[in-house]
Length: 398
Ligand SMILES: Cc1cc2nc3c(=O)[nH]c(=O)nc-3n(C[C@H](O)[C@H](O)[C@H](O)COP(=O)(O)OP(=O)(O)OC[C@H]3O[C@@H](n4cnc5c(N)ncnc54)[C@H](O)[C@@H]3O)c2cc1C
Image (spheres, rainbow, N blue to C red):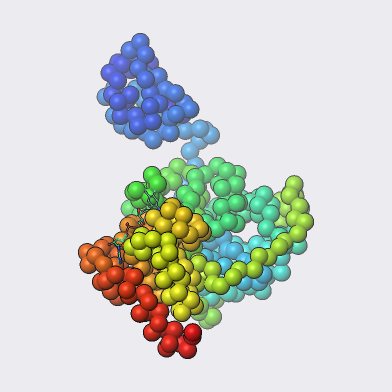
């Protein structure tokens, strides 16, 4: 909490002025803090000319950060298949572990998953901790959180990263709470700071208007979740060797108030946006909703999925689930065709990992051309029908 030394405070008001959160007011020539509004950012502490302000760390003693070692990746597995984000995380975690000169451990939780551990080693892990229990056959967030937190307390890794997926979002915050540490959700970049060795966790902030790099400098482990399709996976290398450790969780860790009665798999029509190898995206350059069919037709010819910019999901031309970008989904297909899309930063962060980007825009200076592999300067309404016709013919489609 923020402490004010009343003896030292001269009531100059500099702290009140610099506080962006309106948490400090000077009353009767003395600074006062509204703890509910104070975010402990420390700006006032640095500004006070009298050194009257300080942040008192809760929880008493400071942690010995040097006793926390190693990088952990929390894997995700469903129906015997790892989700792609697991391999993407391992690819980046390999770099982080090498930078820190520590081993990379993958955590594998589930039921009947033991024989999948080798696959994690082939993707970069040095070591896999397998927690295989019938009670983990369905994802139950509190049990998963308790098991992971227990392992982290025992082994004290310095970094834990997980996918910012429905699963990761459900239980990783609980782990951070149990471990009394910080968590940076939805990161788009992770690096090791050369000087301090701390994890630099980058994520969009203030509604995507700036990229913030966050550190967790007083607690361990440093925890982050990363969106799928942002990081690059390593190619599998089956010659890699690693250690597999089995952990039998005690019953009390697996207890839960949640009981799964039934799991229902929803069938998806056509390729899902996030998994599609080809995405054709519609932007405001289509001019009106009726022209959306030009993009749908090209997507059909290419057997791809239809994406959209926020401009057109906000206009109600298409459902929000098609939105690519900061407040939509992140995609990294083999081919991304942007039709009448300007290339705003909030859109680019959701698609710039695509292998080949084709942009069609009538403005030759549109920012989308800065990231495009191929650019077509022209009117989408004229170009799209020509492309669709040619591609459909080539592929023998109607
Ligand atoms: C907090 C926040 C979050 C956001 N999140 C997202 C997000 O997740 N995804 C997203 O997409 N946006 C997001 N946005 C909005 C983003 O800033 C842009 O406004 C949006 O991406 C623009 O969409 P657009 O490219 O379709 O439209 P515009 O920017 O209006 O661009 C239209 C383009 O079409 C071209 N054009 C016009 N007519 C034609 C034609 N006949 N033929 C060819 N080209 C033509 C124009 O030259 C122009 O380049 C967010 C914004 C904020 C503030």
